[in-house]
Length: 252
Image 1 (spheres, rainbow, N blue to C red):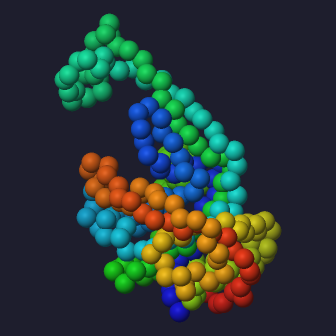
Image 2 (tube, helix red, strand yellow; image 1 turned 60 degrees about the vertical axis):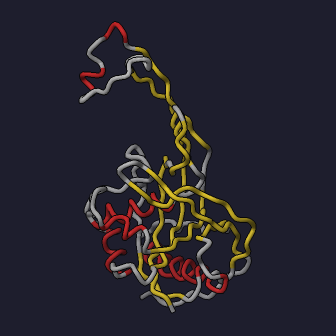
Image 3 (tube, rainbow, N blue to C red; image 1 turned 90 degrees about the vertical axis):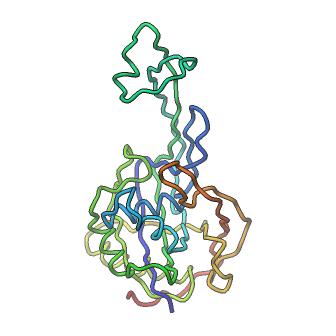
């Protein structure tokens, strides 16, 4: 029996790190590992340059259930820049824009997903030093504001993080759904309709999947490497579906 952390992410707009090439900032259809690591770090009050951040990022496996995802949205930005031929560095943005006669304009694109809802399961590795209950409490009362990717994407509902006990990934999701349904009904709030699509780290042993059938494997470059140079490592992700319900256990 493993002690897990499960929480939900609901937002009107969301963006999840894809390869950033040129002037387009794309987005995956579901949260990235580095994004979830950053979310946990912000909840715990860790800054980007804190040496505890890469340790935290290496201390867990994750599974993401896609409960709802709306249509894509493209947002275009214009920005003034000096000519690319001018090979010099600038100490400030003000210096960069000082010579107004030589400024040009570039158009960049940022992609988003609208009306999204995901349930995220954190499976701690032995190296993780933060207890699941403490991690859940931090997500519910974060030290820093939390966002669904970019800062322009606030969450539209509480994360409702919980520490649960389960033997498999699918049981962890089922336990979370069952324990959250009662309080939501008492508060007169709608329950999040569970999805069937799930993506989990390929490091999960197959016996820990539970009621999940594998469809295919994807490769994502979203493992936190160097935050100073914005480098990320490759990660294998198994994409599958729930093929049978499971009986939920008790919350931790």
